[in-house]
Each structure stands twice: as C-alpha cells, then as structure tokens.
Image 1: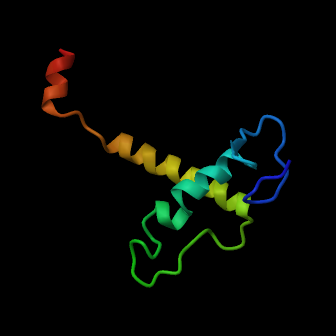
Image 2: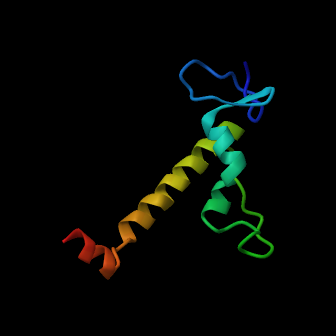
Image 3: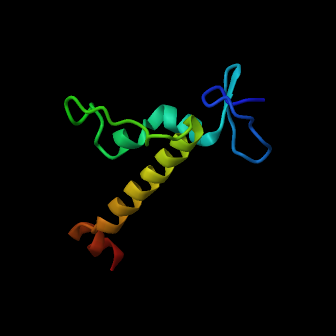
Length: 94
C-alpha cells in the first residue's frame, strides 16, 4: 500500500496511520497535522507576513515530513531544556 500523502510504499514496521480508506506514513500524517518545517519554526506566512517559507527546498514530500518531525523534536527539547519548575512545584517535591 502507498502513503496517501507522499505516494511512497508503506513498508512493514514504518508506523502507518490508517484514516478511513487512506494510509499514511507516521511522519507524513504528522506533517499534515503539524505543518511544514517553516511553520513549526515560526517562519511561514502564518507568522511572517509575505513569507514564502515552506518545506526545505529540494526535498521529497516524505523527506519534508521527516524534517518536520525532527524540527518538532528539536523544538520540544528546547522547551523542556528551558523549563524551570515554579516555586509551588519545588515545595511539593520536598
């Protein structure tokens, strides 16, 4: 079966998501929900008026989806690394 987004074959163990009659690679489905790399990084026209940023140039749809997942993971790590517990949470842990 081929992915309904990138049209590449979905191989066993690739984490496919079935939506109705369609199947997607996990990263392709993620990309459809969360957006392109530029959106995740706040560089697309949603954030920057007139921006033409989208997926990285020259990538296939699946490569762009994989890049979006990596951008999200990087974003989440930076949020977790920057997070500090509020005083009330520190008092609860003692």
